[in-house]
Image 1 (cartoon, rainbow, N blue to C red):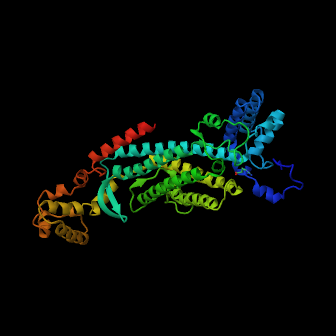
Image 2 (image 1 turned 180 degrees about the vertical axis):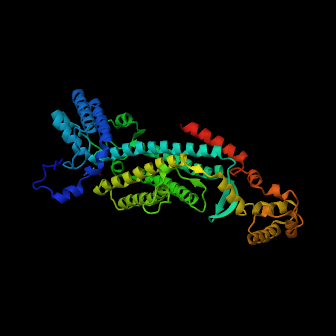
Image 3 (image 1 turned 90 degrees about the horizontal axis):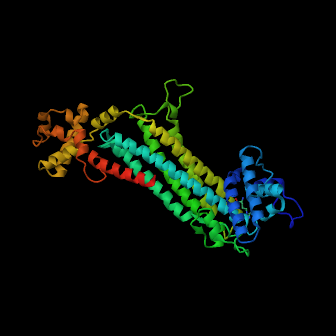
Length: 460
Ligand code: ARG
């Protein structure tokens, strides 16, 4: 046990208490950000004359050496240390002697860990944005290729009106675009540097916080030292946005699972993203989509866990806050994995266009358009609704579509039916006539695709 404290203590810590208190098993992933932050701190201390240039150089070289040795497997991060901060400081002192003892001047682990977390989370926001852009490109690609791929649009999971695959997938483009914009928004608020807040009340050393913030590419320093060490809002916002990403992925997963079912057969999932059964040789299961749907629950749980941890904590730092890490890592690791896998699965997904169109043809998705046809011939909408309702009932009995009936049969329901009814209720017409902004006609969808492309170029 390599403790950072000692002077005030006469006894040693209980073994279970030591490991209960320690965070090294999970904060070791802060190695890179802790080195980055410590180098910036030392550089600022030298500029301010708190340590010498020579000492700063030794510290930076020492930290780089430790980082390299860990990367190359020549130095192990073990649980002899409480956390990554004490691991680095102890190893630094071992390597460079007294200069190493100065790296923590004017700093507390409270602002150190606040900085590490912010640097780490900021990188994760950038990675999330990259993955969301990949998803958006993939969706827009599918949209471009499927402007005329007809399928039923659903409400209540019942066939409702015909749409196209471009239109359906376009709905997800909008969702993930909002997710992307949320990430940008979160970044704007989180990108302030807590280093220099000390334990809670700043320090008496002449630290230049603007300078360190600048070295680490922050917009500037945070403005209240108590808030700096105890703010985890940016994680809560980020995890909430990740939960929303997962909710979108989960809804999409659910659709793919349904579309992949024996009854629908709208899609074929590539072998690379499906699994078989140990007993039933015929099975090809959509496990990846199911797991994405399943992992959504745990990401929500991570968010709830941190919200609950934070709710009773008085200012400023309290050890409860160490609990932020595992919850956050779990949420970001899982969401980023799910985004990566799901996008890859989408890229290789085969759409069975024939089955989609057949399904749209067979579910009376053109019933609204048939009613609108009668309205255009002068019948009040409520009457038309009732005529087509009776017609649909008849077709259900006859096991046929409206379009399958002879004109003479249609005329038994209304004299207003003419030969042009067939054209008026074809899938193509139903879709083409939906010309309002956001509707599925290829004309309108092409306009949206151009907007999507402009968005993607502006964010590339
Ligand atoms: N491992 C701690 C955390 O994650 C680091 C900060 C420790 N500060 C302290 N006062 N004990 O929050």
